[in-house]
Length: 307
Ligand code: NCD
Image (cartoon, rainbow, N blue to C red; front, side, top):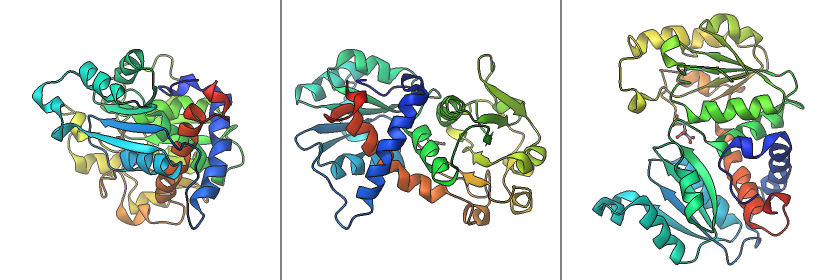
């Protein structure tokens, strides 16, 4: 495989392969010098048209730990500000000789367009509301560190599903591996149609919590909500937030997850994010190793995804 654009490109076998390769990069990340020469001579560019903290830094750290050269395209200080088209920008960058482009853009489908214009490998780092495959892979890896199997695992994804590319990629990945997913949200924060989504839906978090092995909270994406979809954030938190009171309903040993950035006090209480069964910082740490695995499988000579 040349690109990673969607979780559907991987299927259950591809996901399993990424998780397996991630194990060895977790080991590398734990060394005193967490670096291997695997991608020496390769160049990885991050092309981020939307803000990001962890995803961009995570990809760049991953590329550096594989000894690749990295370039960052910062939209605000580039010719995109002067009106250069996406295509011209991409072709200019490619002319410099690159092996992979990591793309984030506010419009769904942009990574597919870029893949049509360049010879380099393209990794989707988030396209609009559509997909965020490496987030789903690091989420799978984090869950698998705590649970031997996804088969029959009950995962609740709570909150702003409508605007969440994380939710779309997670549903595809979790269900491909055999988990049962329940979306918990007010109807205004669900996609207009759930046709084809292999999920259950509920608007009653208190009932779903005790039955869930994993509680995955989504950020309320206020910047993407054009209309008033919520009466108020306070009412949202009262019904759908993982408050301190509600955290008592979480089953013993169940994992609490969030992709970040967190709105503390809205979808999750600060104290709850710090509880021992919260694996939110582990998700971030695993992100680097998972992205090393993805870059290795796309660009390295050893992986079968590189075929
Ligand atoms: C997410 C994103 O930008 O898609 N963050 C991330 O990559 N960890 C989720 C979000 O912004 O809510």
